[in-house]
Image (spheres, rainbow, N blue to C red):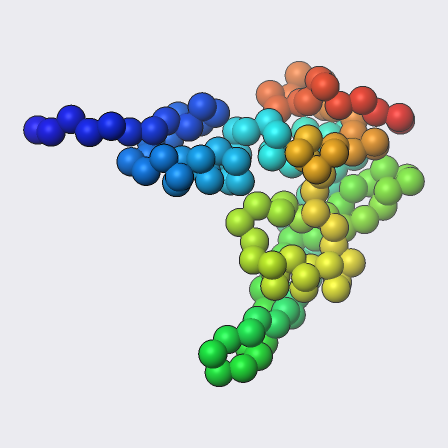
Length: 137
């Protein structure tokens, strides 16, 4: 057996052999990083619709030209009276898919890193409730 140096995610404990891979995970995708975790999942205004889906058609440039792609998304919404909108989790999506979602009226879920949400109202006792967010409602 050989001992090797490794890197550990500070938030979830995932182990990486390469420093840059661990850093990218921590800063861009770790679901337990409070800075990038979408606030909506712990907000009273979040509404998840399992039976309502919307087909999103988006485009990607490739070696052979422009490809047309499609994907079905659950229509999750913010139900605050001053912020009724369709929302999506912005983690692990390509720029092309983000553009496609935007074209269909979806907006990315807010995070601490993106400035938070003025309509955020934490669900009491939710494990990911963000006590630092201030709400106007």
